[in-house]
Length: 128
Ligand code: I3P
Image 1 (cartoon, protein in one colour):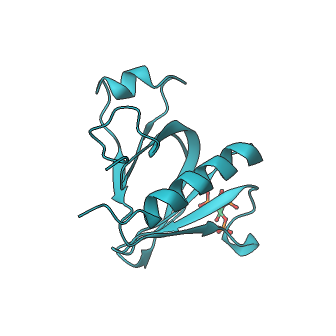
Image 2 (cartoon, protein in one colour):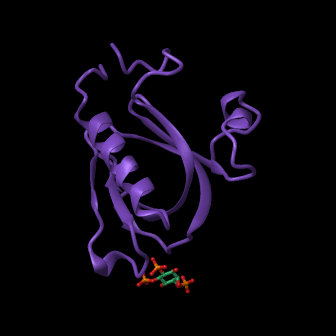
């Protein structure tokens, strides 16, 4: 499995700073709370931690626990429609468990990279 989380530098691992907010939790609408988060994609797991420093080392060394994480198995990702946010470059992730997230970057190229990585992770059928 080339995308196993056990492989430290697998092509399916990606991390970086993004702005994130939940919009739905367990199928219920929640109030937006945009937060700058260190975002880590590992296998089918997408996790977010408070963005203390623009470095992966503290996260990678488990100095900070993720604030929350979602399972991407059975999830969808799409470019968010304009009615979802007034912000630019927003992706909408919907999980099988009824959590909806918006993730956003001021950089279009960064959000395009994340869109590609999340799409690949979701399409990977290796998460048994
Ligand atoms: C929300 C806040 C969000 C905004 C949201 C507002 O107000 O301004 O930043 O989302 O718009 O409701 P509050 O702080 O009072 O909760 P965007 O930045 O994504 O536009 P929305 O209700 O149209 O989603």
